[in-house]
Amino acid sequence: MGADQVKTDQSRKADAPKFSVIIPAYNSAATLVKAVESVIEQSWPANEIIVIDDGSTDNTLQVIRQFGDRIRLIQQANSGVSVARNRGADAATGDWLAFLDADDWYYPDRLRWHAEWITCDGSLDFLTGDYEYWSEDGSLTGTSMAMHASGCAMLEKADGAKKVVMDENDIEGFVADHFGDMHTLSVPRKTFQALGGYPPGFKVCEDFHFLARLCAVSRRVGVVCQPLAVYLIHGASATRSDPLKAQEYNLQALLDLKHLADDFPVPVKRAVMARLRTGRLNLAYALVKSGRKREALGTVLPSLVETPGWASYRNILSILIG
Image (cartoon, rainbow, N blue to C red):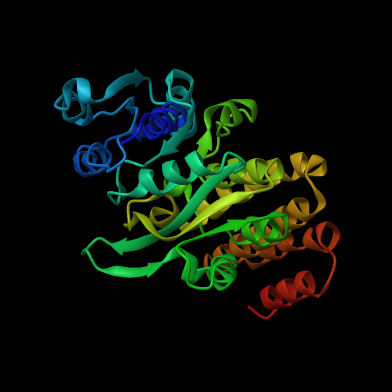
């Protein structure tokens, strides 16, 4: 290897992104080991792994401590997942952030796919990618990109390639029906902090709240068209243990986001309003199932003002006919 090649390799290494992987954990003793080990075993090593014990009452803390100095431990009183993630981001020393919930896991090349792309293309605002849904019995139930309209659009755009750039023409569809969840998101730490991180106080939809704000300031997004991680579907999740309450929380977050959307680019604002219309409808369906049809109708009626058009009328008709 010549001197010029050595110099080039050293320059690439110096410019390579350093990832801080942040894992919030609350009563996660049963699943945390697999999550942490999936980060430790990355083919592109994380700069650091930060686990935030969010006031667990089981033996999560003991599980965390068994990893010793391979992770950084932060303890806090139970404050919710947004506060935990933000606390980890504040403590991070890497220039890029990646996130993982304690019941999910990465595939071995999750960080490598993004790190090598960032090294070659410094114009990407953030990166995301496909992931798999697994049920508790260990069976694959689907992949995120194939199950979302925006994901299908990006797969078509990629035309068989393993990665594709999402530009301003694609972002509206992504916000309206996003396929890349929090655990496939890679974002510059400076961007995360400038946006204020995840919104505290919301038990559901906090990830979309941040994603919409991120998309509002982004123009080029890297998308890896193959699974980077696994999302485990289980009955104890917030959205499945109490579907009605989850839809109420979801709408609260979307209404908060609505007030911010006036400052978003028009395509992103349209997408947020489309999500709000869907959020109203989903809550209305949950209310109808609970025998609260009058409340359900009151939930969807504001859509006529917020997003006038056939879609809103159709939603109201669907509630009226039950």
